[in-house]
Structures are given as structure tokens and as C-alpha cells.
Length: 109
Length: 120
Image 1 (tube, rainbow over the protein chains, first blue to last red):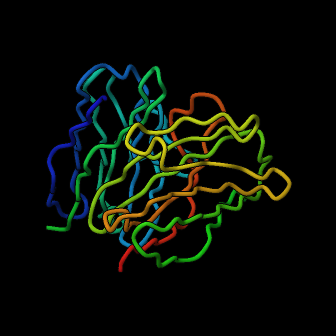
Image 2: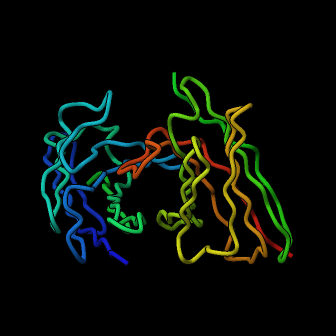
């Protein structure tokens, strides 16, 4: 099973700052990597798919990069509504199994 | 718009079964598949399985093999997740989410979640 490790576990920043979240896979997942945002009491929301493509309606301040085993989610300038938990998710090739990282909590400093 | 609406909260005793529904609207149901993901209180996301709503092909996480069954009813655009032999550590919010019907790489949108509480 492919393990996704997210870092840091918690990131404390102020509005307007740049956030950089990391997701590392235990083996290559090619570009089969998605990022989700989850706020308390809400379902996850897709932000980025296939490592670098923004989902419909996602603001341009969110960007994803990487391939293989190392991936990054960048929020260029934090808005108050961006403080949440972020998860990465991968699809293994065969069988098509899915795993999530343990999450990064982005909190207001 | 595309929407997934799940059934309400459930309270079950250990050893019982639960069946959660996920009603889709705003798109052609059989052109996609649905995945199920759960989240224990204060914990992360855990993938359970996937069903192709076109041909009902399924794929289950090894952890849940033999204990979970995913089904669909195309006539009502509804997917179901049944989990048997419930234990206290099955207490979680269960989500359905849409993906393309063959080898989806991501899931969007998600249902609102269904809380299943297992307690004696």
C-alpha cells in the first residue's frame, strides 16, 4: 500500500502570507495526486487534481506541483477562509486503491 | 448543479449492520462512479471502496473486504453502502463522492456525510 506523508502536521501563518504544504508518497504515484480542503463540520472539497490542475471554481491563489513522490500545494496569499485542514490523496495503479495523507492543519497565527 | 445527498445519522449496536444511501442529482448517474470514504472523530480520511454506476463493478479496500457492500439503483440515481458486523471503532462520518466511472483519480463533489455511531 502506498503511504502518503504530509508535512508539516500544523502550519501557523497570518492572512496574506504564503503557505507551502508538502505531500510525499512512499513510491511513485506519477501525477495521480489530488488535494482537498476540509473545514470543521464540512465535507472535503476538491482543490487540485492530477497534481497541478485547479478544480472548477477554485481561486488562482491555490496551485499544485510535483510528480512521482514529492508534491506541493501552495496558497500564494492566505485569505481568512483558507484556514482549514488539507489532505492529499493518491490512486495506485493496480488494483486501483486510494489512500489519503494524514492532513495538514493550517491555522491562524 | 451536481449534488449528492446522503441519508441521516444512524445509531447502531455492536454486531449490527448499517446501510447508508447517497442520492445523486444534476448529472447522468450511470456515466460516473461513486466512492465511499469515512472519517472517525478527530481523525483523517479513510477510503473504503468504489463502484462503477454503469456496470456495478466494485473495488474494495483490503481492510473492508467481506464486511462492506456497495450497490446502486440507477432507477433512483442512488448509491448504497452497507457495513456489517459493526464495532465501536466503526463510529465515523461516512461520505460518498463522485468520480469518473473508470479508474478515477479524484473525487468531486462529496455528499454532506452521514454520522454512524456504534455503541452498546
